[in-house]
Image (cartoon, rainbow, N blue to C red; front, side, top):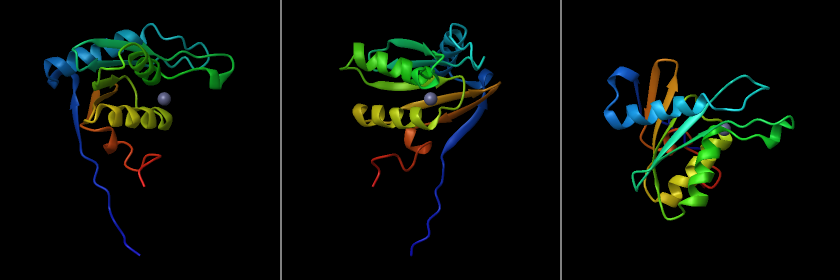
Length: 145
Ligand SMILES: [Zn+2]
């Protein structure tokens, strides 16, 4: 039996200390949250991604009376990006909440497709958490072994 300890590498900061690119991305995520459709949870989430071509895309949660039919902000924007810009790689994502497990797995797949780490900027109120790779949030993803 081998016992191991995982170390999670992240930075905790506040909006005012973000660099221009991260600040722009999280602001776009908050603007996207304002347009969410969340009549059941009343929890609006926004996400914004930066592609390697410099484009920024936005998404938000879209709920449905049949709960599983809804989709989180992260997956809404990631699937839009992959559907419309399949040759582009996601470089960074900003989210106005902490991604759920399903979204973490989808982000891990996007990181695999990109062949490079995806920078994650997650907001919790005024606190910002920055991860330099999805693997820091999901160290044992579905196809890790
Ligand atoms: Zn999710």
